[in-house]
Length: 242
Image (cartoon, rainbow, N blue to C red; front, side, top):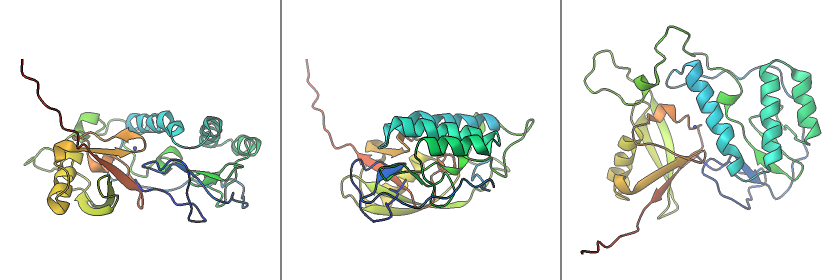
């Protein structure tokens, strides 16, 4: 479930959402191509079962309308994705045309409405990963909730390069972590590397949802080039003694 997707003109207005699922361009896009039939091939850092993938998709569609953009456009995009998943290409294209949605690259990864607002659908909503866990495999969500230190045969994970935008400075910090690291571990690394915000005061957000400390970084599915928002809680509360 990071970084703000820039508009083609380089300008932005309106909400600066963590995942930049949509943004308003200063100039509406004029390019449009038919929806491509071929599916995007991608691989999940942490193998997902069908149930986990379905839950992740539902989470995206539940939170996406909270970002800038029209609810009816998000609804049309969801319907188009569902039609394309059923391989009903004609229906998907008709939905896009009816809603005035243009695809500069012929893919739902990048699309615009008639006002030039950009919408981005993550690849995990558009196709299945090549390493999807099949029935009978290790598909328990608990297996990916927290790495077990010292366990034999534990997955080594892969290196991830993420950007974290710190609220106190507004600067993007680059972190190199492992996909098997938890969000809590990544927070500690940010604190040790930059000296900002004790981990207990950090709140990480991506895709409109707060990332839990026990969640694996590989499970966050943060696309390359996107930014995780880090809000540092600086509010102090005085204890009133009776």
